[in-house]
Length: 559
Image (cartoon, rainbow, N blue to C red; front, side, top):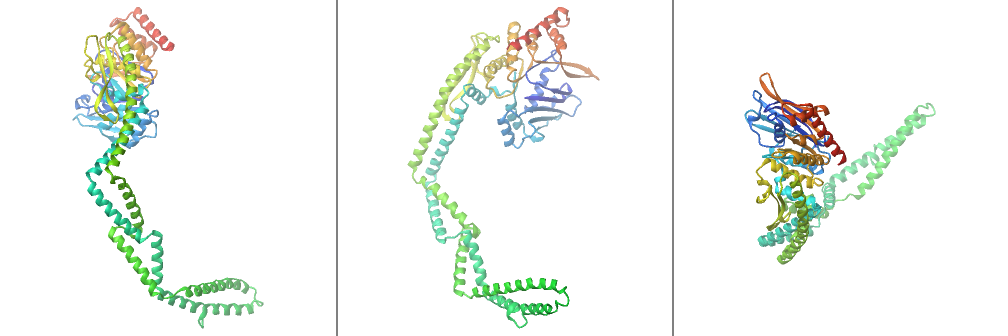
């Protein structure tokens, strides 16, 4: 939901900071005070087209920021993550900076973003219902999603989309095979040759390391033998060997230890050293016995290495990656094997198509039932909103070709009054009628609508009296499940709100600026009295205003 809106140097707003609550909030005030300006500013934050003329005269730029709470929307959180715009604080901040020159910049959570990204994000956050305003309800995709949600068909719609993808993938595989059959055959021949050659090599990464180690020993056998003999002579077999000298030193000191006990510590150090040297001599002798010059084995190892290096050069990979190459070639050969039969691919495609059609027909059946129920509910609401004789239809238009979302397109069609021809909701001309129709649809679908914040502008155009009271009641009920904001001139609509703000304008230093003030109970009585009585407000008018507020509050508690 919308938590705050910050506006600076926009039209007649110099500086404004608003904090929003849940429920139903109305904005009231004199005509021209700037009530709709706030909604226009919010629309700009959500990516609407901007012009330099909206910058307050004398200022360099307009700056608008809107903060939303997003914890309750997994789909929104996923969108933010997919676009690398996520936040860890459960908040989403959209900012729009508009230069006087007309240039503008958008930011999401402090990072630069495109206007298209801001609009896409806005579709998750709020709907603005009013003439010429951004609202997702005019989108065919939104209408389809709303009808599916209303009918409890969202899971079935996902099944249809998944079945469509499977069908299209198998169709593409069949077409690709038929188009490239010769190329696939040539590729299979090449793969078969490669797999046979690498199989014959019988090469593994572990074998390669062992081969390298053995080659190193065999190629340097003479040097190793010579070094081992030199070490043996130095340690134990030479006339002046290290072991004999250490033994002589130990023997000499042992003869004198009775005369000086301090020599015992030295003997204790020499004895382990002598033992270690003796073990080294034994190990060298054992190692030397295994060493031998073997030219024949060396040639065999070198031939093996040549074969491996030759294969590596041929396939342009390091020797140690030859086993991985063999695995990939085998996998690709297995992929191409079923494609050898075009008819088999066609049968697989037809099975996928049949599975799609089965799921799509179930979806169509559910949509027909949901469309009938939704149409009846919306028509009933329209009658209460001064559109007597008006009609609404959630029409299902059969597509020429199946689509990922089913076999039909969904179109909301309305006729605002009796005798009018029904037409697409997107073509409804009157802003007031469009807002009231939107209100009727939102009321009917409020239990399943996912957009948390709904804003209505001009919803009261051309109505009054009982109908105005009904609009207020409907907005009040809607505010129990969504955050609702409404710009209104009607006291009946304002009295039903949970919160009320007064918008006014005043001259400051020769410049007209707009101000917004939240109203308490007494202030609401005065404002609604003004809306009822005009310039002269009497005690009778105030009493009437207080009664309206009390009646609306009682209805809210009873509801």
